[in-house]
Length: 300
Image (cartoon, rainbow, N blue to C red; front, side):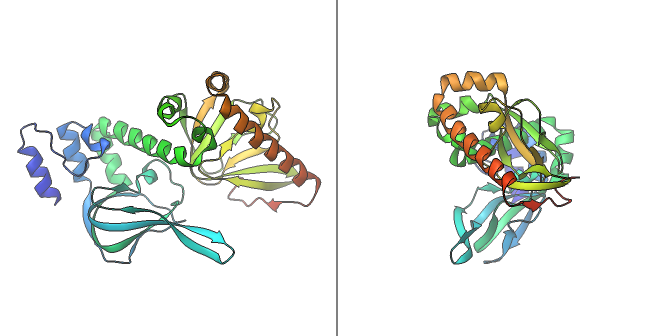
């Protein structure tokens, strides 16, 4: 499939052909860079029922569905216990797993073949090699991952949901992409607010000191905000926020935040309610029963 598609593209004499799939990532690349990118993928056959990606495991591969169908699901805990909740179905042309190229956080969902499928798979090392030779590939991969993060956050983040859909793309342009390794501090207790973070990928822990012991008060996942207590309530941070896994956030500096809420006051209302609730929870946790002791993997 790859060789035939690559040859067909090379013989097209500049014609605009959909080489792999009608995905913006591919359509923005020049011919030579696109050929090298496609060459980083290898074909694999997946029988029906086989898991390609397993929730909670680390991964370093991206996939394109050449033919077939796969199901994306996430464990959801209810009164009957944990059960898979179907998020989406992937068919020919779909690109998935690419967030592992930007963040080494555990996979956020499982992907299982619902029928026999043919996939194109590329490992991070192979794609990084291509990006070294063709810098435009790295730039477009990063841009694609950012677009995917924003699309996911638009469905889960109260900050973005409160903004009219037609204005979200312009809003997100104000945010800066920041990447944190495991153990990095995103917010330090006692510091002045630097701005607002939206967790885009990974997981962070809210940690306070109870005597000589670090205590985990909460964990935050994609869609959650970090730093809103200090920012909205205009006080110094009352807890550390530390990356549990490699984590990506979209960061809005304090000055940009003040401009943002002038244009979108509904965002301030939602963040204020979140800040008050979390501040109350922190105070109650410190005044009552101790929280879980932070493991070594949280504080390095």
